[in-house]
Amino acid sequence: MSTKLNNKSWIIISSLLLAQLILFYILKYRNQGLLISEFSLLNFGNIFNLLIILLLITGLFFTTKKKNSVLSLFLILIFLILIYLTLILSFIGTQASLPGKSIYIIDQPANKIISASLFVLYFLAQFIFLSIVWISLISKSKISIIRSILYSCVILIVLLIISYVYITTSGSNSGEWKLTKEKGNLAFVLGAAVWSDDLPSPTLSSRVDRALELLKDGFVEKIYLTGSNAPGELTEAMVGYNYAISKGADKKNLLMETTSSSTNQQILFLKENLVDKNGINDIIIISDSYHLPRVIAICRFYNLDVKVAASRHQLIFKDKLFNNIRESVALLAFLCFAL
Image (cartoon, rainbow, N blue to C red; front, side, top):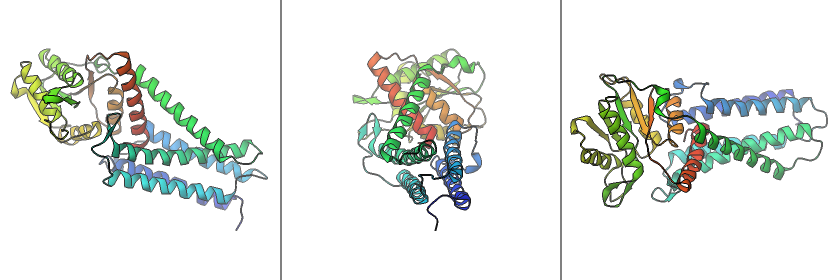
């Protein structure tokens, strides 16, 4: 068996890389309860996933044409196995009952952090492989795994910076969607933290306030409150409901869903239970301005035609910075992995 990459082995490895990409797409959509028939290449994350594989295949093709290539077929096969292995482990991580569900890190359950970390390893393996392939093309020196790891980490950091800039500069206020006063409009309030004694956090109360404002001004006819609960407290939806009642809202205008525990689950509930239902016209999702870019990305992934409205919650600089950083990570995780 030749130790160098030739045309025949390039075709086989390219086919395996494309098969891995298709498998990733299937798992990505299945993880969100969607059929692969809903796949759209226009989705940013899907384009990005495809671009990585095309760059790998292109780099490997030029490797077959390069004399005295320092990239061995054995090393290529090692990374191919590593990519498949980390992808399978990542999917298992989304399906298995991982420990740490009740432990929170930066306001996220530890089991979700573990699952996301597995996907990061999967992408890191691809980035390292990509770096090795292209460094071997432009350099005559021996392949340095450490240097490739450093380059891969730089890529991840750059992606996070781009995500942060997008979070902080993208327009996500309701003006972009031209809210109209039409019969059947619905305000869909995303859940937020509940404080001690079952009181709404400022984040939750400001979201409900925005929905009540739209209701009062005639932009919506109903308000749908969402969110489950942590042990020992009322659900986020119920706390939001009680707060709305205390503000003078009529019970007949309030609806609830009390089982979702994440933004993804709330948007999926909307897709499965409210979209295209009789009597519902525009659905206006209400959340904080820093949160809405990810909400919009999730809705586009689900092919949902919705509008959004930002709450008027104002944060101090430290809290705003923290939330923007956290959302940057969450947005990148969703775009790349649909987590």
